[in-house]
Length: 239
Image 1: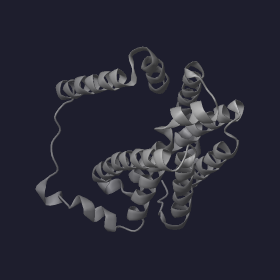
Image 2: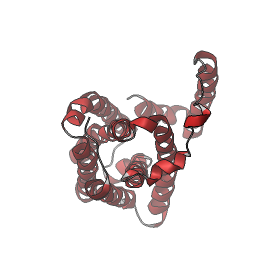
Image 3: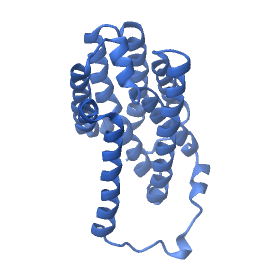
């Protein structure tokens, strides 16, 4: 909730490179903290071991992982470059952008808190509906993002809505792949990290070579494709 606005604020004080250096140092400290504090756990018995990637052969699992990839790639294609987009498209200064990012963070916290109520009704509806709303938000920001009120509203809606996606996909794994939830979760984490990298890279290329709103269009397209894929192909088991 506070990382993005704090990073934006500190970037003006100490420079963005030093902000990244500080984040890297904190990451190293976290590694040592995890090694020291987490207990060791027994491994899986040899007679129960299966090839992790065989899970992808189950009905709907590959489609789910592709949907996870596209939704997170869409998120990072836009959110990585929210600063140049908002400062140049909507005309926000550093202080204004910090408040927008804080609003985004608060909305994400609220969305995560409310996600259980929505997911109890329908996981599939949440996993298809959330990216569809984000696709519409990207379109609205592309067309009318020069208005600061519209841009701020989109940031709040984006934070509120995207919060459903990580929680929703974790719920999907625990319900649809309950017997292999740990292995499926490891694939999910790998897919998300790859998606974050690819989304940010492609979004940056689009920003440099196509135009200011191109990360938004890329993000919106990926979100729309995610909604369609979830609706058509992702299998869902009832709790």
